[in-house]
Image 1 (spheres, rainbow, N blue to C red):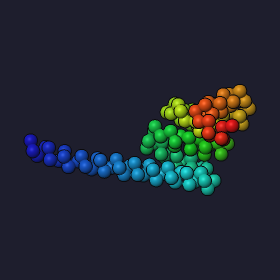
Image 2 (image 1 turned 120 degrees about the vertical axis):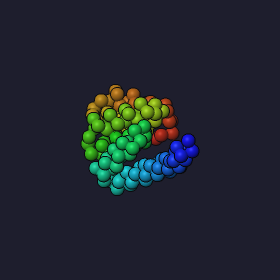
Image 3 (image 1 turned 60 degrees about the vertical axis):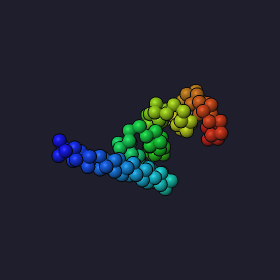
Image 4 (image 1 turned 180 degrees about the horizontal axis):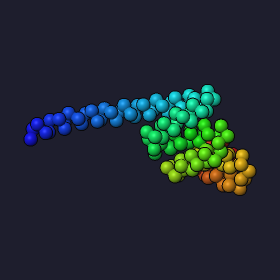
Amino acid sequence: MLRRVVPLLLTVPLLATSQVVVAQSISQLFQQGNAALSAGNFPEAERIFRRVIRLEPNNAGAYNNLGNALYKQGKLDEAIANYQQVIRLNPNHAIAYSNLGTVLHQQGKLDEAITFHRQAIRLDPNYSTAY
């Protein structure tokens, strides 16, 4: 019995350690993606944020930033889909509503754009970009 328990007990710290490493790598990837966005390297930012999402599928911030990278590349429908995913994951994400409104405005869908910008303002009246 002891022979079975000891190896099991030894694997528990390894599992915990690997989860910490994954969390750190996701955080590092996210920072790299933000740096690529800031540098205007939108294809690289897209690649990085897609990787973050593969590692952490419920990361609303990664979907939002992927949407930003796609928007900057003119991939408007893909950007919309990512902003919508942010809202599904976090219905109180004012920035995603504003971003979605911006893309819809660019597509000429003004009534929809206004609706999303108003929702962004309701969620965060101090978010000046939504105005």
